[in-house]
Structures are given as C-alpha cells and as structure tokens.
Figure 1 (cartoon, rainbow, N blue to C red):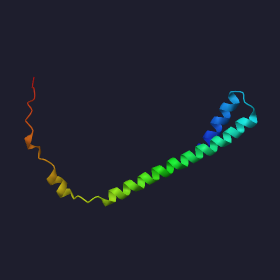
Figure 2: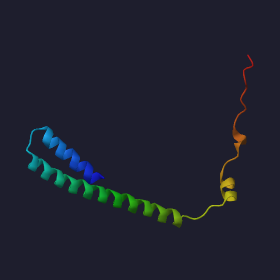
Figure 3: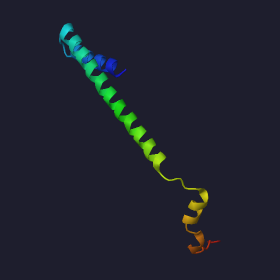
Figure 4: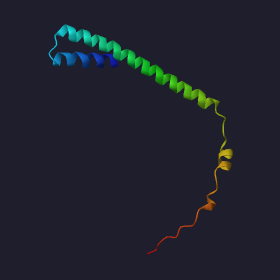
Length: 86
C-alpha cells in the first residue's frame, strides 16, 4: 500500500509540474521502492518493540489481588466533607 501511495504521489506531482511522462514514471517507481522499504523497516521496528514488551511483561513477577489490596493505603485519612444544604 505504501509503495502504491509513493508511486501515485511522485508520479502525480511530476506530471502536475509539467515533467514528461517517462521521468515522472521512473521517479514514481523509485518512490514506490523507497516507500515500501521504509514501511517494511517501520513495521519490523514496531513488531520487535511489541515482542520486547511482551517478554518484559512475562518476566515481571505476578502480583495477586491480596498483595495489591495490602499495598494500597486505606481511605480513612481523608477529612469529611460538609455539604452545603443551602
């Protein structure tokens, strides 16, 4: 998809500016290759980052609900609010 978008963008821009068909077409082909390679690199980077986050998440120690309830402070320290009954 990105290759097609790059081809259409560069070829269309070349034809719009008045370049001949063949140089515009060749520029579009090079842009299609460049856009496709850039998108492949970006996708590989995103997949590697996602896999790394999954590994980090799997290596974290599990915390049960009881432990998290013990770690949270009780809400008894809050002052009482008086409502204005107006």
